[in-house]
Image (tube, rainbow, N blue to C red; front, top):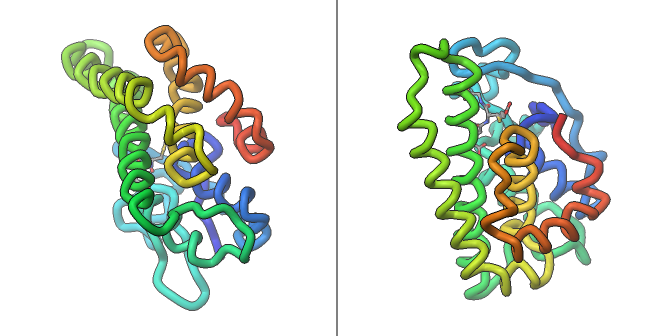
Length: 204
Ligand code: 99T
């Protein structure tokens, strides 16, 4: 399989961390891609008409996107004994909601990133940027106040997504100091980011 990839993308990172945690990294070949909404660059437009990564090309099926489709697919392919990335039972709905919360943090952060990196300074909207940060801030509050018990449980895709989202905030928005408003979450992340799968995929 071919995974269209960038080391800066937290959405791609979720995929690579899952594969690493399942001992399945060798099942994909990474194909580098860069681009943005204003210049698709080398984004795999043939694989994903939306021009986004990750996209996963399979030899025996359609190309998969977006990241949550890919992780759901890969979770069905992992060997016995792998973590239950999407566990059965009521916990599944927690995992899916936690992953959606984490991905929503990244969606908002990427919109901030594009606003500041791609638009001329005189065209940038402070209200837009701060509106996106407000979403992130509320989500951090929710993680800190409602999700710590889940985060302390067995490894699943919700935890991986949260770890990748927090890593992206550090990577692009370290000056926002998210840890100041979420100290319990920060303590969890300090431990989680030590996992070899997370260390091997630090954004850059
Ligand atoms: O939007 C574009 O044109 C290009 N952007 C992307 O492909 C980003 C890369 S992160 N990926 C997504 O937005 C995927 C979102 C989708 N819902 C999913 O797969 O879950 C780039 C981050 C950075 O460079 O800072």
